Length: 48
Image (cartoon, rainbow, N blue to C red):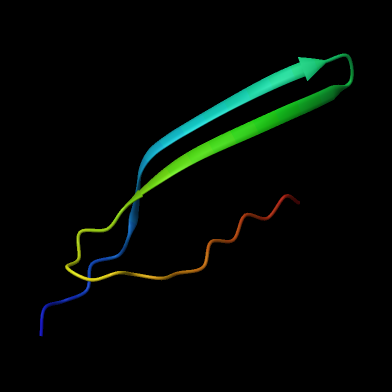
């Protein structure tokens, strides 16, 4: 069996727009799967 490689973030773009005391942040992430099968995972992004 071939060793399963982890999926990696291949591209990350973050933009922030600030208006007075409110900031809107947008993140775009592209993931790369080097395996020969569909992968599924869980992504956690704690804010505090």
